Image 1 (spheres, rainbow, N blue to C red):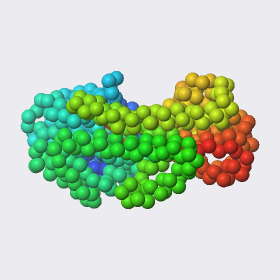
Image 2: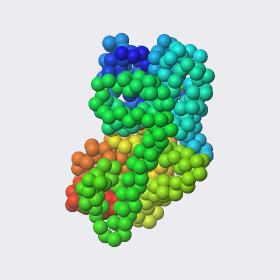
Image 3: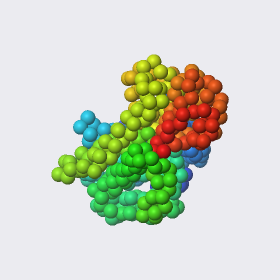
Image 4: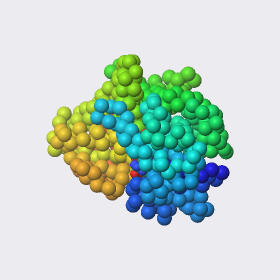
Length: 422
Ligand SMILES: NC(=O)c1ccc[n+]([C@@H]2O[C@H](COP(=O)([O-])OP(=O)(O)OC[C@H]3O[C@@H](n4cnc5c(N)ncnc54)[C@H](O)[C@@H]3O)[C@@H](O)[C@H]2O)c1
């Protein structure tokens, strides 16, 4: 079993650290956030991710997982150092490598000879070489091992991935990284670093394109009087297309798709290719946020000024507490710009958010509201009694931006129901 450092204890780093320790490795996870580290050292996991807390607690109890403050404290004597730090969007759309480069510069002098630095952060093509330069250690190799986990099922996805991608110039380094996943049933794709880095961006861009495509089809359905639910069933049944990621909604968001699609447009542009198709995918997504706002305004009778809107769902998707680039927040901001008063509820959000009256349950969010908007696909919302909700509201108007609710039940309770593409 190997000695592994994981730098960054966020969604990816913490999952990586907990899962590698679960596989039997000795893992030290370092983060600059001292408060986060203190909580993790007590087995208190600060993010919502199914099964993660149990793995962290198990790892701590068996002595295979430790948390320390800072990257430097994590890497002493390790054979592998995983970089799982943020790669946010820079103002010009490119991925900002500041975190990655500064960690590489920090740990470079401390790494053992023949150890391997592994990029798990999503980084543009060429970053493996940038990290190699920042390390200033020719005796330490850099390997790309992008992560494809989905928030909400991160532990499952790490331990049961569709594939494991390893990009390395040195075949021996690639084999050493692949060997860390012993016991994980998945095919390996071993390639060069540039291809591994491109696979990650291409995968996210393709998934974003599928969602934008179905949202565009939903708009066509509305225009021609078709029902997108049946259309999706019809096209998804074709094995070449498949059902995954073909759910219309308020548009994609989260910590990855928005920045990664823009970064890929930029990567292509820098390399002399105009990725017009992907720019279209991004533009359809912004239009989708606006289309949901239009529906809510229509439901309110044409103006949002002073209108109370109840919002169910704030996170970018269900089963996570992640609010980063959530379509729900983008839509709420647009509603507020037009004068709406927003009462929001989400099962995992407890902290106050600017301009949203945060409610303790879905019913409170509806009290006195003229329109109810369902913006995140939490299962809990599906089973709420529309009659009870209607009694709390000042008008029976619902905009179901996830096509989540049982439409006939809401219509029977006297609601005017607007979904997406139906
Ligand atoms: N979130 C996802 O679903 C997902 C999936 C695949 C890939 N990725 C990629 O993985 C990377 C990390 O994403 P995330 O969502 O885990 O980010 P995150 O913001 O949740 O976590 C990053 C962590 O790194 C820590 N950190 C920052 N600088 C540090 C330093 N110098 N030393 C030690 N720790 C430091 C931060 O305190 C934070 O806890 C990004 O490149 C992202 O694009 C994310």
